[in-house]
Image: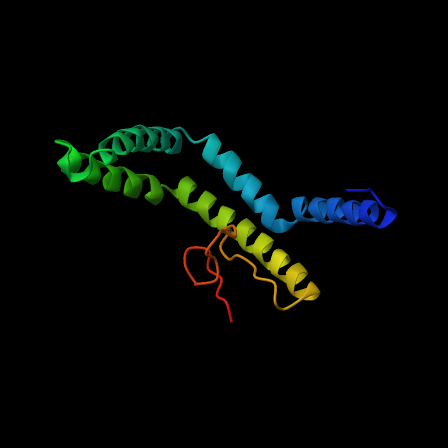
Length: 143
């Protein structure tokens, strides 16, 4: 691809736009929530425990219900996830993360629709994949 002046100008504007998002209130709230999460010992302990049980879950998934520890691991995953999600710092971080994703989704949709209303824009941070348009996990629907 040849770098025309228009292309360079477009990249400059995109960089400025990215800087504006970085300086937004939504991003500031996200950075604050992430800092608080990273520095909370209880939250980190819960995350570590969940990641450990998740590794065991992945091992059990290879065999499915036939694995002798299937029921025990499935229950432990749900229990650990619930404990982790109920932690104030984890919950605040997830809300802030979702708010940043919503902002990025709105910006993406605005840019895409300003070009053409035929452009499909993923929702909830999902990337477009083959088979998109059916309203599945990506969230978009073909008209």
